[in-house]
Length: 367
Picture 1: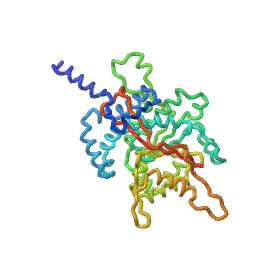
Picture 2: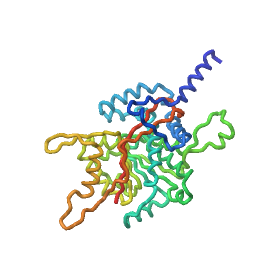
Picture 3: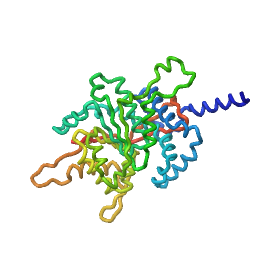
Picture 4: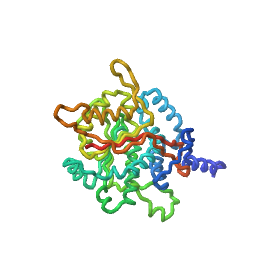
């Protein structure tokens, strides 16, 4: 054995299993947030990213991350997501902590996400169509955080829900759509979600006997659709949304508004006309997000939350009543939180530094 081989092995092991380091921000210091998600499941979700991008994480990923950050800072999204290596670096760096934050959020919202309140014959029809499958469409979900979080959610549901609830939502159908081509990233994560993680050749017989995939491949179906939802509301995306139980816009809506408020409003109105009563829309974004719109020749900034409520609760619901007719409501806001924190536990391990996350959330139900 070479003189430095033991030292190199130690360095490699340290690099491959680094405790998550998070530098608290000043506004975070007074916040005490504890996740209801078991720590071992959180680590399991991080391992999925670590195994999915093992080669990328074992190399010097910092230069790639700096290039991606530069493009994002300049709002050059075509460049930031224009290379396969950029997509892998982004998913390996920013998606893991988001996945943990999302599964924590999904779990807290499970009463809404996995209960179908009757709102008429169409809602009953949707419930019958869903049967033992729940379809989730993740708009802007190419980086995979939502996919891994939903896998974690299914793991939780399988472990704690009643047999009746398990039967109702035994299978998840997840459709991720994005403007960039995240196909390989989505396929890679989906494979690791449904495949038992690799074990060391020194693993014990017990470890080998209990080693299993996060989700049984029969219980989840993950697909990716490359599509720019602002340029054309195609038949393809419309058909995917028609029978969705849940539609998510996670850290995506404000970017859409920044691209075009008018086109984003049009998309949300098209979405309103497509989804069935009883379906849910979950919007998560950075707190304090603003977008500029021009009214009467003057430009003014509005909070994303205001724009969203204006579009769904005013425009979609009918801002003006027709004479002699009652106003038809199409959406109701079920839950919102203007500032929600998710903090990473210091006991978690990941090869590179991750960050705590803060978000605003808005959950709507189609009436």
